[in-house]
Image (cartoon, rainbow, N blue to C red; front, side):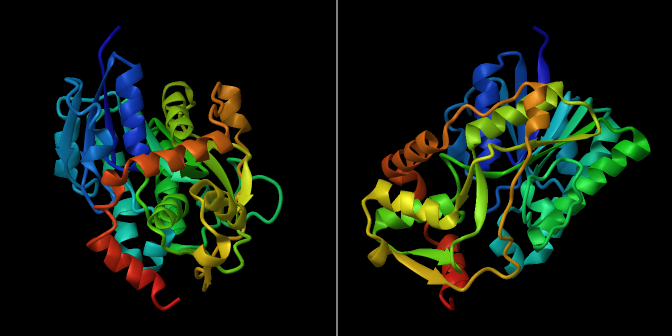
Length: 337
């Protein structure tokens, strides 16, 4: 097997770290360099199981800094996989500028590095949120992007740059757009880890509006596996949706998490003012990725039960997070609602 070098940006985050763990455990021919700015959601503990692998290397740096990107690439690499992003819609409403710097400017810097170093493949990890609210049916990859939040707009801006570089320069790019992702090691500001950890602490959970927003859910291991598959088998210039056609309302998710944690609805749930511009429904058509050979393996109910068990058994991972910056954000986000 020939040795290959992949640069993974944002590799200490939720989906990025799952990808790094998976690649180093399953692909002995690949060396991985993680480039991460170590912002609030990055956690070295996420890759502790593989950090001593001689094929693992870490570079601290911002993807919007060309010098940091060059350090990560070093003497060359075969692929760059861009997980680095500001990702939380609520935070984008409070501070949209940070999202533009990372998701738009950072993507531009990486694309220029791909050209400068003649990198063979660049994969942009994106989101179903760029399609905006989907009233009915499923979003295919050729559906127009209609972002409705600063986060979704910044991701759409990065995606459009990626496709434009392919059209203009022939840059060998790919895009994956995943549905809502859940599983171990997710920073507890997103719905499932927020609700699970709050319920395990005996705290209430904030349900936005009527709670009837619909999301499709994919397990993080399936999502990471799909990204690796598209990286190696996808056609440059193409977009691939990664979803499970597994729709649930937020109320349904809340009810199941209450059951799994043994908590009572009346004592544990409070409805709060809905998010500004909140999309009601996302739904992905993933048949293109499935035709390429990818398929999700983790049934939602099994994955959700295992995720709750993971957080129950890993309090040492999440309890330190829910203080300091996180606590200040939580108060800022929910106190007035």
